[in-house]
Length: 463
Image: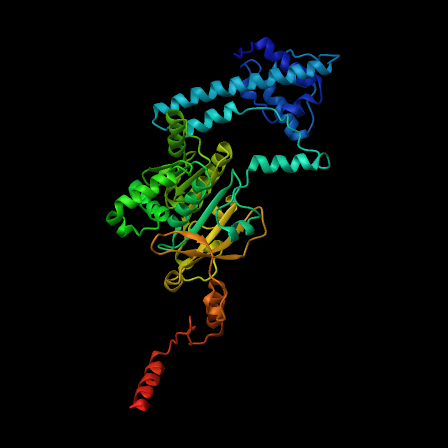
């Protein structure tokens, strides 16, 4: 329905109603903007706002008329129906004026080649509304309330049993989840593995890469799906093709898209919107590889100001996840101090605590050459908004050939050093004690000289 522009006399009537009722201004003050009123009424509208902000009460109508040269008057016998009609009319009036001003401002920005702020200007104007949702009554119908939360958030398994346990079931739609790791620890691999877990469960998703090529990401997934090492894929091309075709019949859809580094959140949105229009593709999840290569849309930020850049990007991405009602995962680099740490903290993340503040779940990826050789990789829970998992560690199996990360199947052994968590604890204890002795892993002694002497002595004895 078209929203007609209110004339100056109609706007005057709105101000008269506001000054005649102590409740109306309180109910509209979150969208009240003097700039929306006709020029002849602007001073009066501005005076009302400033007086309430300073004295927490409406000014007398005589004061407004005397100070601004207007002829406002008190309206008596205001009925409940009059107040309801006023609220509807004022909301529509404000929305129209805000949108008109946003369009004019957008034209100026477009003329100057400044495109990024335009979307926010228009969206803020369209979303102007009065507060009508007064919240939930806590004790009323707890079952419906809990089921509504479950159905709306749609808690979804990560595909890793022990991770789900720490998160009380998995990820929720509308959350921002970040995997952090140093170079080579498997940030992209975690994103690719969780994407595969989700499409295997029937979900549809989008994997956007800002670093690796589309084909390389797809080839890694080929290895994970088929179990064939990347270097052997072309040797077994027929077998790989058959296995992928068969898997595709049981899985959801996955779109893999390369976008240039330093792309903005708006460019990501534009691609996803285009995909929805052209292919009617609705994404259940979005994987962004990775966060540090994305720029904010709403403001120009110096690239050197990593804290502010990451804060704005995280806020935009989380808002986007909520709008889309999608699962959103990304990754982030650890800074130099995180490379040698055994347990990660907010100081380990490149960009620091700005990401930790905004994200819902943040995980640190820990691995080493020996862990990879025995097929293990560890997630450390740095932040969990909706569970008590902070500080926990989960060991997962890692196949170095197929690059697949799966639930841990390693049975407990007598040597506690064989488990990732205990191994870390043992190394840390050695560091804290200042001992120069190195940890023995899997029964292998560090002191090679003593071992060599022992072997030579054994050979001499036999001789």
